Image (cartoon, rainbow, N blue to C red; front, top):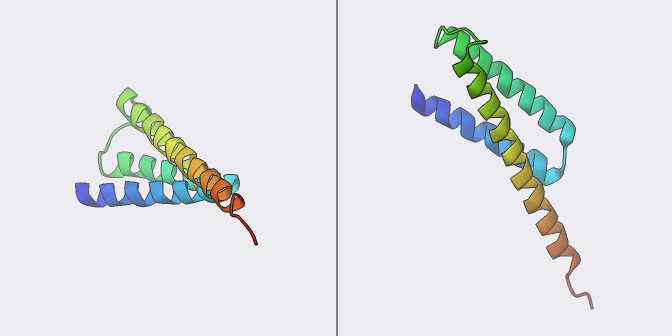
Length: 91
């Protein structure tokens, strides 16, 4: 079960990196909302915990930070690639 959760987190982070790389802010918002919705569903159904408990709220906050950091890394990589491609010497 924990392996599946890690794979889901990795896939979610890759989507956020792709959104940052392409600078798709709307798709990032969709991915963020979808990821948080799935996290709430997981907390309620699998863990059978209160979604407003301090531990659950901290996990949701950390999910937002994970997504934001992934988006930022993708955005930086995208800007680096654009700068690299823009500095090509043309004949």
